[in-house]
Image (tube, rainbow, N blue to C red; front, top):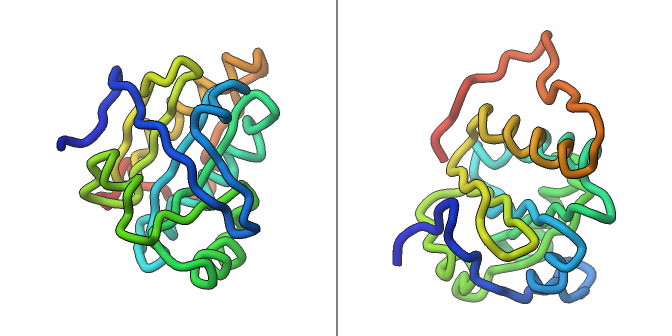
Length: 164
């Protein structure tokens, strides 16, 4: 299976979070778009990317857009990652054989998908991609009808991309 790309329908999934709450893609899409970010705690590019995803979540996540981290690690390691990198959006576990990661055809992490309420993938991004994160910000700002704020501060040195 090839990597899911923009225009494809996102495979449905249902995974448990660290607090054992069930998160189903279909149910989340009823509220609005979903930003699904797959990661491994040992991945340096994931460690670099997730604070920016948290920034996006703080600005544009709401009752109308859901951010979801999909961990390929065990609960203890995932909880530690969330604490270390300041992640407050829900993290779900895809650790037993990675069924969801495999359904999405992942070859690298982080891989981030912006999934529209109709289930279609609007954006598919592998590794860290500054332009893709800015696109997600613009899409969510437009949907919420709020002003787009710069995602990156002028004092930050942020590369255009980092492969995962």
